[in-house]
Image (cartoon, rainbow, N blue to C red; front, side):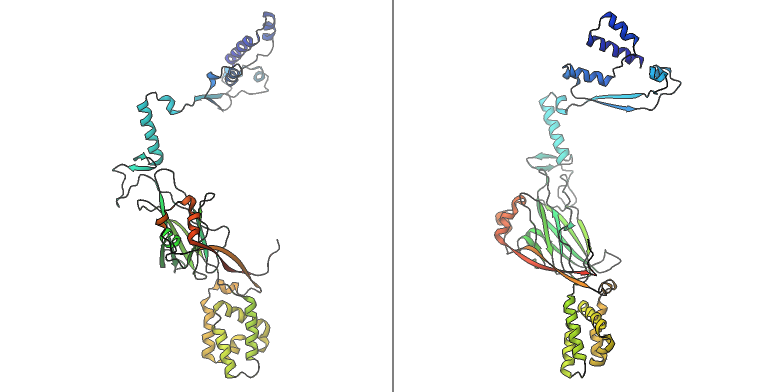
Length: 423
């Protein structure tokens, strides 16, 4: 610390140009210290910027001075006990671009090629225009090049539209590096999981090509286009229909480049909600069944009641049973009335449908109130088009797609269980 003080006094005296009398007065006062960072900053103030250009300084505390070190206790403040000195480690580094260190043109070019290879070709090939020419050692067992990494698309559920009992909306962003990889297609896999405890066992699998099967409109009655990339967005969304309620599905997505390589798959597993039910209609049918069972029931009325109940399906039948018992249980419980009016065989066929529902869905259908909500969903209905005829430009796909696709609207229904909560 004493050496730093002497340097500070010397710098301060040179800057001020003090007279001998002033210097003697200054020596009588508390010595003025000038740290090295402050000294570098003073050089900047005086115009000597070249000396400090690119210099980075980092000061780190190294803890307090031990009492055994006499050099740490030379400051008057330390002597008076007002402040305890701490040693500081000053690290000074100067950053410079690599190209400034290379003076030979050939070396500069070799360095540039090596950097491009590491950046775009994993250091296993050379950059030629906008693609990678892989080394002979950078080929997989399938004979395809592996030096340019293929980005993995991230498949996810739509944040805008929630899944329904028969429909989900999947989306991802189209991204590809400017050099090395050219994505020409996406593969979408849909699998129905049959084992509830083991998602690895699947019953059916459907594999579709985004370009050949969906975008061209060739064979995708249950898969439709939602959003497509344009100049402002790279998002792609697909509407997947024809799903079964209360069922687990697994979806996978691969990117495919112009060499035929597939990226690592991105997976999403989802269980569709319980089947939707029109609760107002279920109440009306419960009233209709009561009127048919009330009093003498003719053969025609029995057949009408049987056909009506058999055509309902499990969720609607469950709600009819619920409303019937809520209103007319005093005249006989629904199960007993069906057996009494229709006979045990027909009543057994009707009531066996309720067993098709899972315990989870049965519990939801016991709610006192079930609302029905409708939402409009826009999609693109595409006619068969040879996409290879006009080429594939991901950034401006909308202009070509809208020539072969018509925008339509689909109505999606959802159930809200229980009383609505006030916000």
